[in-house]
Length: 477
Image (cartoon, rainbow, N blue to C red; front, side, top):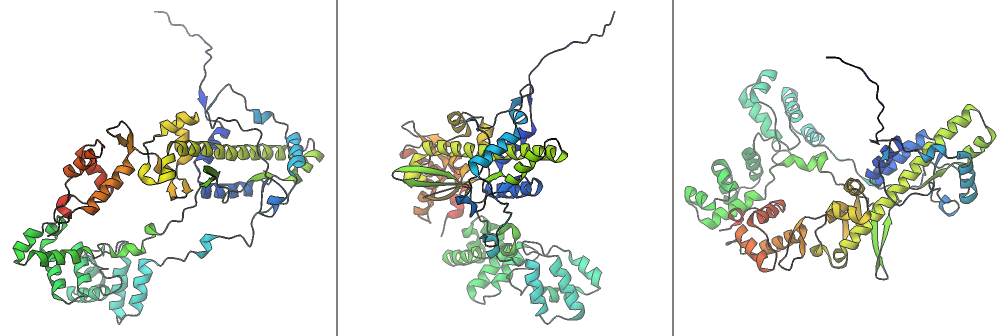
């Protein structure tokens, strides 16, 4: 068998991720706050870029990139040329200066309003407990043991430590350990320092010395699983108490905090949302504004234009040309982001017009594919354009993803969004007789009667998403 080696040339086309395309995709995904941070970083590294201040807004407009094509981001082929590389930056800069005017760099303003400056520093659970320990009567070794215990209380307020470890470390008796721990368990928030859920709830009940609190403590001690499953009759039978009394005790337990430390959790801090898009109604028509409040427009510093004119072939000229190219690509990507978000939101408003006119009950089913076809882009572009971004309208502030709803068909063939169905389910549950709560089957039948064809399994799914317990757990006695 004879083997030959040949050299063949094959011409193919393939998609490549250029640096410009990669930057455009990244910028499209940023929300307004992230975009502001990104722009600040670019301003630090590219002296050619200029940020327009409020005072300059009336004197000099922001320079936009060369004409941005109507189509949002599309991949480029390997054989395609990059027009930006062939731009005569000297002419571009001169044109910018003539049309837009020059301006002085503004990196920050002393009088710029910042909501963040009004946010208080949140006290940690450890700091809160350590302060109370300082105010306690514990001294010497007892104080050291208590401090060690506090250091091992987790974010939910539970003691994450084995008893044997404490006894061995400090060479103390179990009685002394329990005595010191009992002091910590009197600290605020009540229930802190518990070793399990039952102990946590019982500590909170110790604040009340009435008969109902004692009954509730007994239920926690011996019938916690029955309580979790709302088996009130089993508890009443075991304790030989009236159903009404057991129901009241169980209601009291449900008011207790199973995770006393979460009030201090950093994860649960209030989130402040800055809308990326604002929609207002003016003379019967909806006006869409892609917010620039947190990401002001950029333009080119006129100072570097003059350097480019005077230094024709110097190293400075080459450096400035590169920075000009980078700046123009950035400005183009930001403008492209604005255009893409505008078109996507415009399409959403067209589809969800009844929502904006009448409210959340009138949301329609909508997919990324639907909007992509309307705008003429890929689904992934729509996904990036709405990811992590918020919209403000007369009904409130919503995550833009909220407007993309799955759903079912009505008897008339119209689509009904999952959000609308959930609202109906919640209204039905709110109106039910607590002693005879609606089963999922009954909820399904109620929905079918108003023309919403839905299965019992889907009803159960939506009920779970609303954090509504099953009918057996909602029943009251």
